[in-house]
Structure formats: structure tokens, C-alpha cells
Amino acid sequence: MPLLRKIYSKRFSNIRFLMPFYDGTDSDVIPVYESSHQFQGYLIQAYEKLKDIPCSHYLFVADDLIINPDFDELNFLCRTNMHSKKFLSPGLSSLNSPNRFKWYWTAGSSKPFYNGSTSYKNSLYTYDEAMSKFNDFFGVKYKEVYGDDFFGSPDQPGFNLLGRWKDPESFYKVLNSFIATNNNSRKIPYPMAGGYSDIFCIDKESLFAFSKLCGIFSAMNMFVEIAIPTAAVLTFKRAEVAFFPKDSRLVFWGNDRVAFENKYDKDFSRLYNEWDKKICFVHPVKLSQWKMI
Image (cartoon, rainbow, N blue to C red; front, side):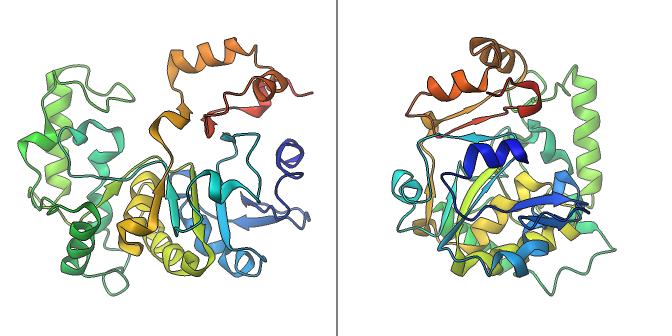
């Protein structure tokens, strides 16, 4: 937290840290109690303290994501075309899209809707209401059946982020497990979206409605990068949402991350001083591993 305060305090006057299981006394920290895989639950737990902050919008940023050093509370909304919008996201897409099954987290996406320990149905939009919102948001009818294009095949490239598809046998094993978890059906349990969620911005007026949905999805154990995009589609109209330009973000995995860190010799001052001004944010930057001056 001291490093994050040093990085952001001169640019943002109202900073709060949402920290799991915090038992200290810092007045700018709000304790939350949730898994990092369901960090959407942080919002509703922190809502009572967040709502009293004098602001028009909230910018949520992961602790290992660094935003453009030129951004501050006076220019962020205009610089990101957010000034006339209610929500800002890196991107939202239909989860039931071609080859999307290969994204690591898709395989467990149906499971929350068969979680008998959580009574969510009376708190969410009905299936038909949600379908209508998704159809309006994406401008096309949301596919109600998981088809062959959704699953793809073991030899197709896809969102194989964690290397699960080592052979056809493992692919079909996960596919069969998915079908079994989905009540032995290819019909979707509920329309869902997906997308990168380590940074997003929301207007104050919408915070409670959005946070409430996030809290429900957290109780259902829905993965955060499905929960936050799905809550966004259910809360906002497409015209109310802004997106970071695709070429304005650097998100690294594996060797690309190592190359990026080596480029700056893990020197945070160099990263800031040599920042490409068109880049809105970089992730991950593990501050504990970088040299700070």
C-alpha cells in the first residue's frame, strides 16, 4: 500500500484500498472477505463506505495493474471517452462464442447456476429478461445452445491460456465434464459474458445496482471475469459503455511478461519515464519485484 499511495496519491484525492481480511487501522483501507477468483464480491461488501466518497465515478484498479502516469482525476474521464458514459471496460464479449470453450474459465461457467446452496433466482433477472438484455447489448440473438463452434476441437487454436489441451483425450474429458455439469444438456443455463476485468470504471449512480449483481454472482462462486462482464451487460445499455482502445493496453503472460520486465530492468522509474503515452495501462507489474526509486 505505501508504494501504491506513492504512485497515485498526487493524482487522485480519494483513494481506497479494498483488502481481503485486513485487520489494521489505516483509514483508507476497507476490509473485504472474498476469494480473489470472485473479487467482484468486494464491491457490494465495500459499498456502504464507497457511496459516501464525494465523486462522480469510481475507477477500480488491480494492485498489480499500473495506469498511464498522465492520467489523473481531472482528465481520466475525457482521456478515455468516459465523460458521457456509465461504464468503462477493456472489452465485453458473449461467452457462447466460437471456440470460447478453450478459455480456461469457461469450463466451469455453468456450475454456479446449479449451486443448490445459493438461492439466487429471485434476485437475478429471469432467463428471458437476461436474454433480452444480452440481445439488445450485442445487437444479435444470444445463442441458447452450446454448439460445435463453441467447443471447437483439440487441434484448433483458442484461449488455451493455461495449457489444458495437451492432447485430444484431455480435451474431450473436460468437454464431457462440462456437459455433465450443465445438467447433461447443451442448453445454456443463463446468458453470460466474458472479458478482462482487472480495471473498470463506473458512475456513482449505477454503483449499487451493479455491485448487487456482482455480490449475487460472488455468492454463486462465479469466476470474476465472467461475473463482472455479465453484470455490466445486465446493468447497462450498449450506448452507456465505453471501451479502452485495443491498442492502448499491455497485458502480458509468460515469456512476453519476462521480456517486458527485462526491457525496463524492472526499474519502475524507467517504466514511468519511458511510458508510451498511447498505452492506458500495463498488467501485471508486480511491485514487490520491481526497483522503486
